[in-house]
Image 1: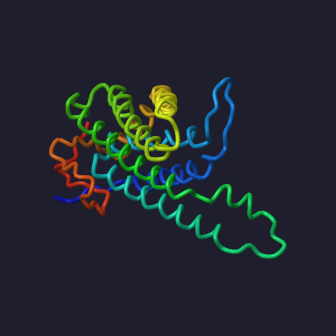
Image 2: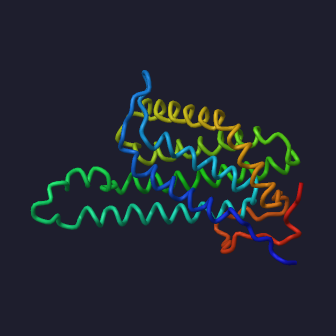
Image 3: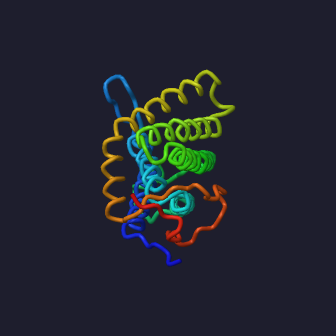
Length: 237
């Protein structure tokens, strides 16, 4: 069987990685929206879960798994290169070292917490999305986008807060941070549902695929080097 090659998949992966890296860089910025205080990362990072929904819904769990691993290693590389750049001695007369360090001085514990949370949350999101698609026979997309986010963002938020702040903040405060961040991310996904519908429907029409992961291996460590599926694994609507 000839493999089915995609036209938009690689472009979407590139955008996904860019959004992920930007969310890591702008996370230090705190903004006020009415009584709420949120970081720049909270505005952009939930977009990566929308990308995860699109990857899984249109291209299948295997393609989403590949994108997650690319994003994971890209984030790790950004952190390492950022630390190295900060450690380099500043040139005489260059007085922006402190400001540069604020952006690129990634704290190792926060990096580890963020990477672990991203890995666990994204794979949980894609798994739930894929399984629910089979169970619903491809209907009720909104139940999958919202349901997978409820699980994925729950895992992500709990992991990052516990690993990043466990032992330094009180359990009550950590629980408060988890709850407030989690509710905001889920609301973000709900509000973005019409956009997700539009993108998914466009891609299914243009790519000519609608993948159902009925017999897919959900092992996150399985290597899928090519974003393509055998024709027998691709269901057309």
